[in-house]
Length: 399
Image 1 (cartoon, rainbow, N blue to C red):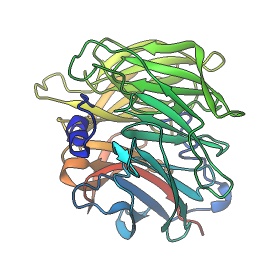
Image 2 (image 1 turned 45 degrees about the vertical axis):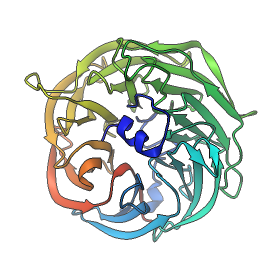
Image 3 (image 1 turned 180 degrees about the vertical axis):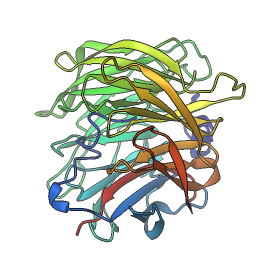
Image 4 (image 1 turned 60 degrees about the vertical axis):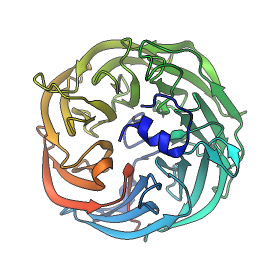
């Protein structure tokens, strides 16, 4: 289901509605796992969903790392549309947006905090705060665990919320509203920030805005919990492309954005001193002979840095491209059907052996094994049924 259809059901403004993250496995959403953890055998998988259908909230599964088998563990109820999730750096807490137009009787969405049991995966609700805008659709934690950053697709803004010592959320310390539009009158009539992403040093915040065809760039002020425009305040993509999600290469030299509206990837060279992006190339996410309707959703660089993956909704596939680590350029490898409809978010487990795809409109999460040499995906046969899965986050089970 396209985001415009989703948000109509949520009662949001009639906006035409439609990444990833710095230094994989050392980012706030997915910190590097300690070597002291040994050779883990299981992962905990957290699945964010839309709850206006049969979903009850955030689903928790256990994943066997030898087989890819997923087993239901629990579900955290009580939050409406907990579509996107983020861990804190310690993995003791989990944060979720509530992707709605009104919360607690007031305009705007919300963000919720949960305490996480590291062995069972069970979530305990801590508190909820207004997010600062309508339709919060993505969030990310700062490495120091002091703040959470939130993108609001329908509200056209991004916000900053402080994290207290006990993991609870405080009220927003900053709300930054974008201005402008682009060439698509149905989808780009106004700003639509679609994700928030930090570089490896956590100095700069990158916000792909589908409505502006820009990746907005901010400097992070940890003293006041504020965002300040970078000296180079944005990087452009092709008019009508609709940038959505974003990920950095592990070497920190390159970044990749997936463009929802024209089904492309744009590769950038990254200057980590200036926080600036320079376009290298733009390539299609689709086969040359595809003639149907498609929009893109998520993007991730493999932990090895050798491959780039993206999700196609319409073609219903994961596209795989090889990365030239000397130039950042991309070369087509393959497409793998996701065995479902409308693959939204997907995730690569921290060992780099499995990719899990969330098929939003067929209510399934499907596990694939990754060939580390070729980057190709092979279905494991492991499929679980979860109502309207949107976001997947994984971490090891504590010993």
